[in-house]
Structures are given as C-alpha cells and as structure tokens.
Image (cartoon, rainbow over all chains, first blue to last red; front, top):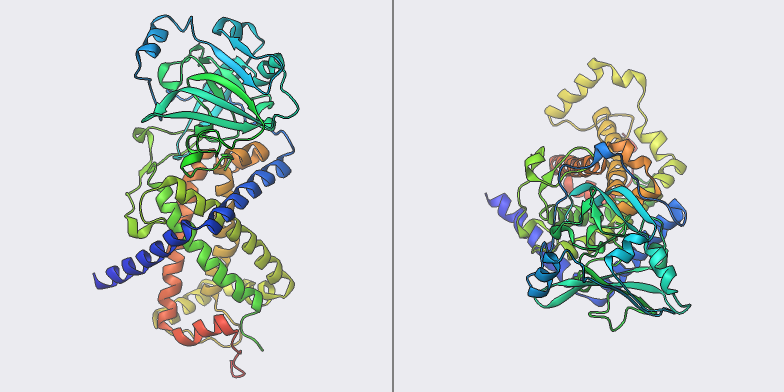
Length: 245
Length: 224
C-alpha cells in the first residue's frame, strides 16, 4: 500500500508539473507546431489530395451513432422538422461573387456524390455510413470563391449553452472530392440525431469537423474574430484545428 | 571504452520522458471512450471485446479529465517519440550497437542455453562474461526495440484518419481502425510491463552504478 502511495505521489508530482507546463504560452506554441507538422506530413506522405477509404454496402455499421448535440431544443427547429425542412435555407456568403440562399430542393438538384466512409470520433469510436449530397466544391463554384478567401467557415443551428457550434477548413479540404454537404444517410433523409437536414462530410478528419445542422457556408480570409478565433467550437476549447490526427 | 554511446544515452532519457508523457496522456484519452473493439468500426459498449477501467487523475496527464489537453500532449510527444526512435536506430546501426550487442547467434537459442540463463536470473545472478547483454536481455531489448516501439508508432498512425487516407495499407495491416486502436492500447501496456521489469532488475543489480552509467556513459570493465 505504501509503495502504491509513493507511486501515486510521484505520478501526481508529474501531472502537477505537466499542468503548469500545459498552461504556458510556449507549450501552446509547441502544440501548434506539432499540429502543423502532422498536417504537413499527411500532405507530403499521401500527395496533395489522397482519398479517404470508401467501403462496401456490407461494411455499413448497423447504426450510426449520434453524438454531441442530437437534437435542437427550439420551436423554430421543431417547426422545420414538422415541415420536412421545406423552408430550410443554406446561405453561402462572405468572400464570394454571388451570395446564395439554397433550398434543399436546389441542393438535391445539383450533381450528387454517394460515399460509404468511416466516421472517427475524437473520443475513439468509429461508425461506417453511406452519405449522399452535392460536393462542397460545386456549391462554392456556384457562388464563386474570391481570391482573398483562405478558409471556409460552417455555421450551424445548434449550440452548447448558448455558444454556437461552428467549424472551418482550408481550401484544400473544401475542394476535396469527398467533401460533401450530406442530406441523406444510408439511403434515408438525414436523421435529426445526425444533423438534419444538412451536415458536412469532411472525410480524413475527426468527427467534430463534420458540422451538423448546417445553416451557412462562409468564405473568409482569416479565422480571427470569428467566435473564439480558433476556427471551431471545439478548437476554441483546446482541440486541434487540423483534426486528421 | 565507454559503456553506453552518447546517442544511446540521449535517446534513453528522451524516450523515457516521451513514453511517460504518452502513456499518461493516453490513459486520459482512454477515459473518453473506455471500450475496445476489433475491426473497422465500433461505437457501442455492447460490441466491445474489452471494457477499460476509468483511470484516476494521478495516473493521467493532465491530472483531471480533459480529452483536448491530453491530445495536445499526445500529438506533441508522438513526434518526439517517433523521431528520436528513428534517430537512435540510425545511430545504433551506424555505430555497431545493434550488431555488437543485440544480435544473437543460433546457439543462444538452444533451450538448454536459455534455461541456464533463466536459472541465473532467478538466482539474481546478472554478471555474464564476454557479451554486454545475456540472451534474455537481448531478447527483451530486441522485442521492445524492433516490435513494440515501432508498433506504437504504426498503430498510432493507423488511428489517424488523415494518415489512413495517405497510407491506406495501414488499415489492412492491422485489420481496421478499431483493431489498430485495440493494439495501440495492448502494446502500451506491454511496454508498461517492460518498464516495470526494467526498473525491478535495475533495483536488484547495482542501481546507482547502472543509472549513473546511463548518464555519464560509464566504462566497460576490463575484467568483463
């Protein structure tokens, strides 16, 4: 028992020290550097646009787990669900030539991509599902992304205690062939728990990048000044912006 | 002659630190979803082959549950761990450490020879003439260096969705992302067991001298 408490003491000393280091600016800089190194290594090792593996119908998991917000507790959202999202609009704005406001019917009228991919949650679990929707590149092509744009920001209808959910990615991921705005999962309209009526699929990155309940897509030059400035709800709370690790 | 080359000593301590940080931040990450699966997918505890305990704060980095902060430590020290391992291996190939000290000969593998070695260990007799390491040491260091440590790097890569897109063969190698995650966990504990054994044997055999030698380099005994 004594040895165990000595061991626990040593470990606690280490964790206390680590907590001190973990709060420092220098540590944050090192972590940022490591994240960029991971992103660079993935790009170098796989070429500029490697594809995430696509699976067969037989590989689809029996269920697609909902996580994070699994519903939106508002009268407006409940009305949208009741109306089959007939009045839902996806805005495309920011540094674009032609701002858009798209209905689900308009999104369904675009060329569609269907892909069976694995979804990896940052917590560690994985599920496989079949997603259908237009490529983000097609939507951005309609709007015309301006030269100055560096990032695409995704706005969502859900929030955590009043803090809106949002996400962002670079243009490399935005124009990747597998980056789609999905409105169907496993051949059915997207369920509420998975982000109805629209969720981003940004394969090659972890689940929190796949923004649900999408309301707007914004082309921006910088992520500064948007919410916490780190490019996403979880990124503002210490998670990596490049979630390919 | 110096007992431990400078590259070996530097790597030993850098590696000790990164393994401790990776292990303890890994336990924090495990707490986020303490269930292990085989195959490509797995999300429901009912499908898990193993339910991991919840690791207490004193065993984790940081010392409270935070998946975000634990991942910061983990993605940073993954680089320290993998790059220092690569550099050490190159140095050990070039300076002859592997060839001179770790390569075994067929006659070392005879059951009688191994048995003699095991009996000597059980009698706590660790002095051995001629070679720097006895057979059991060579076997343990060989398994750790060439199997367990590289497995940690490659199973870690296979858990990363960005790496999976770049190197899809990682998924085939380990039989799916959830299998790779399970292996990552199992091998981490195998390394934990090695470190415990390593420390117990150190305590049993000239702990101060051996520790100092790993810092200063030490000198090989002319008599040995």
